[in-house]
Length: 291
Image 1 (cartoon, one colour):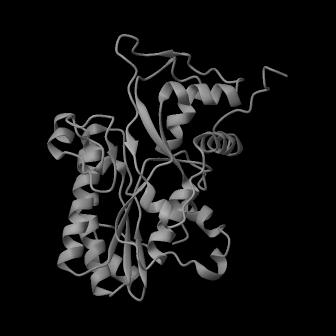
Image 2 (cartoon, helix red, strand yellow):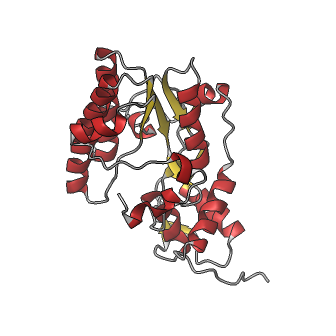
């Protein structure tokens, strides 16, 4: 389709020669079948998310679960070599009974009851979708590999701002006066893309792959940003000064590193995110106060 929202894809290197775009709807099995037919591999990337809790529940559970069923079934019918499923650490770390001292690897799963109780429909949907994918892949003898990234940062290809970038933009644009007493994991978008290619191409790849560079407190995020971009009105106070500072989760990404992935440091991820937001006109470039 000639939709202008796809322009950034047409501008990718090699796109003129090697990229064909197919219109497909995750909930329309036939449209997926047409797109997947004749392929060696399928990358089932992350599905769209929303901030509205009501539609989040419907959006996550419909497309995430039924869409996943359709993708695996169409991949099985087309006899593809491997399906790479973009899951999330949202399907890994949510568990009230797990200490932050535990180093999580690919064997850990989020607790669905806890996701429900805390109304975290994103993690609930991601967990159910990935469990559905594994169950179906086993039944249909589809070679499935999953990548579980954290919040993905780095340069934007598209002109619009995505949820991950808003997470950084809000601090720089002065939309908030404080930062939350919370932790967040980050990874560079190029590392996530490379992880997908590595797990597709490596014959030996199997199971899940955690894809995390580092997990840091929001206070550390604003400190790093303030150090690199002191000209912006970054918050200096935490919204919760009563409770102890939230501790970061620990993840072991040895599996991906063994396939040859080297993670981009979080400072570089944050720097490139801000530069991209400036270039795309989402963030005014202010004169540096220090000069």
